[in-house]
Length: 192
Image: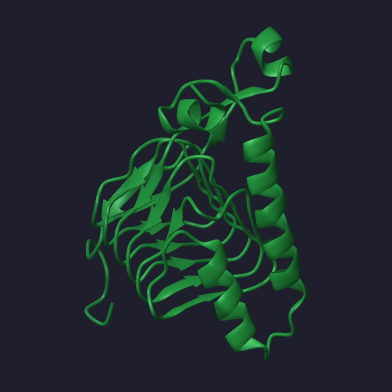
């Protein structure tokens, strides 16, 4: 079984010594580097690079530089996707964003994790768990989403939150660890 196959199955795998994975990450980092050096006005080139990098995109999306990811091919974004500056996606596992997802600055989505056991961790072993985000989700600035998390549609994740467990649809969730504080619409003025 290859290291890539182990990763896809959620098993421990060696991402640091497998030439296939190393080559895929080098390709990805080169594209991210090129993307991050573009002028903001070079929108056509930005779009072309993101379409080449990401696994699947909608027609309408915007990702502000700098942006970094590990493979790119494991990332799917829906329509009307927006990621503000300094978005990092460690996509050893699949990362799926629905439509109308808005990501504040300095957010990270991390599918990678490492063994608690120091001996295995020191050998460079890691695992990857998918992250899934529904439609109409807004992430405030500085949010971290950890491996294996699913976030339901129509949800707001407050700034600075660390999301280490699933969050249901239609809620506001905040904190470290992130927790639901209310449903959407609860206690809001009619204009919201």
